[in-house]
Image (cartoon, rainbow, N blue to C red; front, side):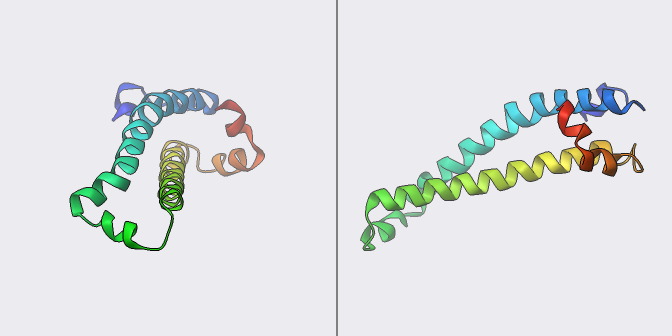
Length: 115
């Protein structure tokens, strides 16, 4: 959708700037913010709504350990989802236009230096 506003280009360096705009506007400001809020809100609120949090409190585990476990599971989940989102966005932007040059640029680090 954003690429309909920004015309496609044949310049590989200009495409890195377009990806930086998309990444900053779409992924960082919206997906990461709302995604993190949704993930961490559902870690405890979902348990309260389902009325299943008391099962965890009945287990012989300290509450601090339970909270840290839920927190780290949220961190791992969000890192996996947001890294996947970034990789898919890069693949969709670079590979259709530059099928021959994109793999070499990703492996040599030229793309990562521009971002």
